[in-house]
Image (cartoon, rainbow, N blue to C red):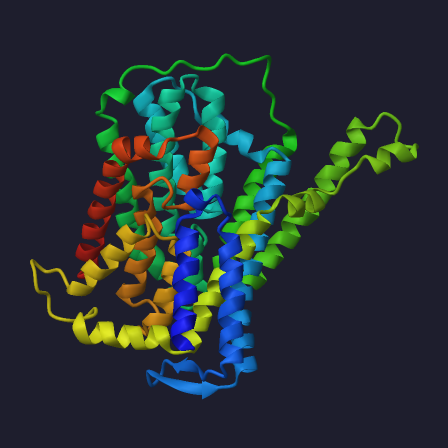
Length: 455
């Protein structure tokens, strides 16, 4: 029966990887895989275990207890993501991201490349790489007229957004998983990964700035009338971003799970959103004494909640609980032990020019994340390895999984959304952008391994 569980996981994983070929949303195989795996565990009366990390062994437990345990860990991540997504939607409700367009005041392709790369690197660390990519490509489409130029800019935005998400606990869902799973802490994550991630962004941008595609000036889109920004747009932008940044601080001070801080931030942002929405509505209502005006007022919080990506939340639920099923059977733990017996882990003597075999393994995981969804990849690594919190292994996994997906357009959520918004061809990206992403990934990896020896 255990072999059947593994087969179901492999088939489900394959369906997720071939999402674009099968034209089936990846949440469907994820949810189906989760339900079937746990059903097989129950019907087969398979023994389930919990890893005792203090003694590195498996402890038997009851099915309902282990299921509730994993559901609780998964719910922490999902509630956190729902809060972050809602805050971002509230900012967008007030058109707060339009204020970012004010930073773009040049028609030089090289300068524009660096502006968008830096903005993507910073924004993705705060509002996550997916949302940052959506925001910046939306702005890009309002500035750059030629589609070929936009494709190049979009490709570099994907690289920069993924690099920016890797060094922040709230910048990428996989890094968030490691943070909430108590594998990394905020300050050490930043300390170890900021410079490697910056290099991962800067090297491709530097090389690209010397390519013919970024020579000369861009053909800008003519503005249609005066573009004015609502007085509340900037306020909600800065308030929303500050609220998200506050979450790691709240966790550090209170030692409570991150989702508690995110709910507090959401509550504060929601209060101001309601106040500003009522103020805006009262100014635009012709006759405040009629019932029609009140009926036309729609709560920004309700609007934001209806706009969050529920399919992504369900996908995370399915894949995390499916991986938890394998973990509870001891499959991942035993696989890690076998790998440890054949491939030396971190802390072993270097074998080739100062590099450990484990470094190569993690880098291969990064390359694999360009093909395989990085969420189950990181979820599996959490179940496989028992290294202590802030071990260099976890930091390297965060970097590799976060930036490795840039090597293919389908390798990251940022790449997929850019592909959809600008209709980027898979092979065009592979030919024009993939090699830049690979150079950045390798340069950042080398930087991490170098810094690790001194930090």
